[in-house]
Image (cartoon, rainbow, N blue to C red; front, side, top):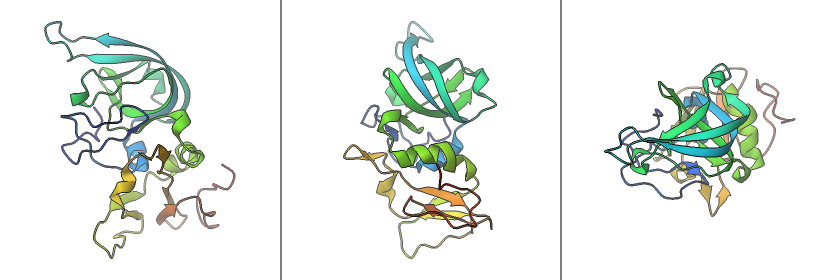
Length: 216
């Protein structure tokens, strides 16, 4: 299971899938960049089929769902993608299992002994529902800035405690979509001096940034 599955706050971060939090499944809130960086593998893939695998015929619902996929593009975990033949999730939503229909998805998750697992707590979304800025972040910015740290602050004034920290002050922005429109369009990017700062697409980063995003 993903490391993001905890007994923390009830948040549902799988955009475009089931749009309710399942009873019994709790996910720690996280910015998409955090979920991206915590994942073993992040990819764009097309789901082409599914199969229920029961662990015990006497305990229905305790198995897992095996999704058949066609990998389109890998964004993280390039050295591990050859291990992946299927994508798995728990059958029960109370165990953070998530249902995927046919179509193209952004999939992120963790490698387990049984295979590649995704859950409600991972960064999952229908690919076509992601904005252009989100896709650019996924393709270019997040991986290059996984050494940056994103922290939340609810009591102002909020100041970074280290130079590689970006502060998130609005916890409601951790929801994937608002009124069916994507709202995750920021990235905490690393500069050449080792510091990190928010990039939200309103302008180009400075010349000292280690990442050129002007042509992505």
